Amino acid sequence: MMQDAAVHLTITEFLQQLGFADFIWRGEPLTLAFERSGTLMIEPREQGLLLVRLQEISEYDCEDLIPKALRAVHYDQPLPLRAHTGMKGASQLAFIVALSRQQLSIAGLNEALGVLDYLHQQLNQ
Image 1: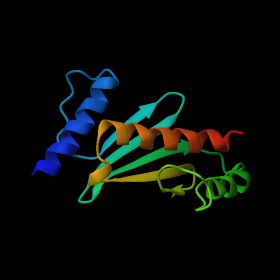
Image 2 (image 1 turned 135 degrees about the horizontal axis):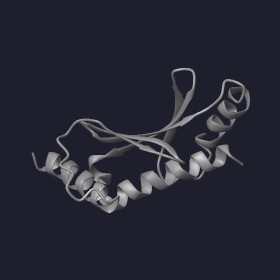
Image 3 (image 1 turned 120 degrees about the vertical axis):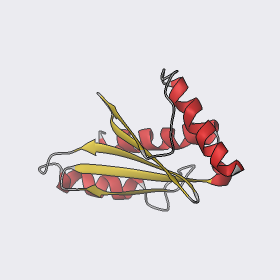
């Protein structure tokens, strides 16, 4: 139960930092759409939190972007957290980071978001 409280407090604090002062998170997966940076999905799991950042891509860009995404998350890349990539449907590229319960804090969440942001920036270079 204490771990569930840690998830709740971390997500609530994160949302308050974004300006959602009166938002009450009820434990369901959370989807936030940002005008410039795509969609962020946060899903509580038994093991902690799953964070997914989605970016719309054109079918014409897949041939270039998918190999870039795979290289960006390769095990030899110096990322502070392990990241994965994949496609959601035919037009959304996803980068995924899982936070364990031990990593669960506002600092851990911000670090994971920083990794997701960095990975998406790598696609646009």
